Image 1 (tube, rainbow, N blue to C red):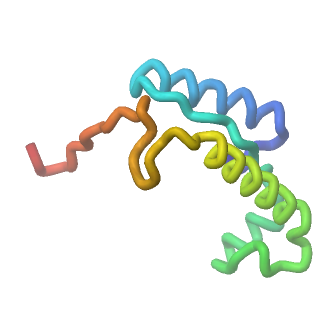
Image 2 (tube, rainbow, N blue to C red):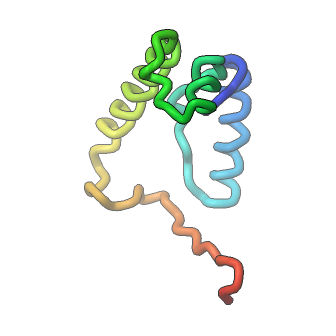
Length: 101
C-alpha cells in the first residue's frame, strides 16, 4: 500500500483491494506492508530524484526494507509454483485498448 496516512488506513484500503481481486479476478493478493505518506517522498517526487538519496529518508528506507523482506518471504513460501509462471489461482485478464475491438 502506497502513501497511506498510517498503518490502519493501509490495512483497510488493502482489505478492500484484496476483496475486489478475489471477487472480480478470482485471485488472492497478499498484504505485504505499507509505504506511509511522508514529506521526504513528496519532496523527492517533486525533485524527480530517488527518495533513498535524501538524508531524511531513513523512515522510508526502513519501510522499503520491510516490504522487501515481506515479498521475499512470500516468494520463499510459494515454492510449489514454477519459476516464471503465474500462480495457479492467477486469472489472466484481457485488456481492451481504446480504438481496438
